[in-house]
Image (cartoon, rainbow, N blue to C red; front, side, top):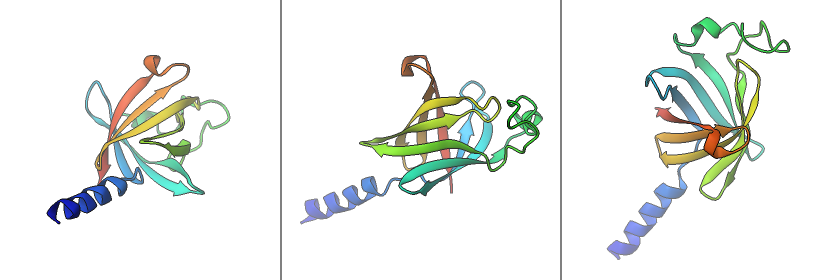
Length: 137
């Protein structure tokens, strides 16, 4: 009986994991906070919008390095994760660099309820960039 109860509790906690919520992006080199992204679900797909830009990136907050089509627009509220869909134990979709407006293939893996591993690449995952995001409670 105890084993069955343990299995039910353990299974529930695994399936309850979701990428939805607010996440702090961390620079892999400096370990400093870069931004806060809110991931939300819409029409069975996940999107992530930029809520805050840290002081590290604040010099670019007015989009001075963006492409002409988004130049002079505020980055806050911009979707940087689009059309993410769950596939097995990971999520696949697109990540958009808010400064260059370039789109990359993105794979998100939940390492725990409070940690995401984000891998973004243009051609092959091997040549992409991986970043860890921490959940904000």
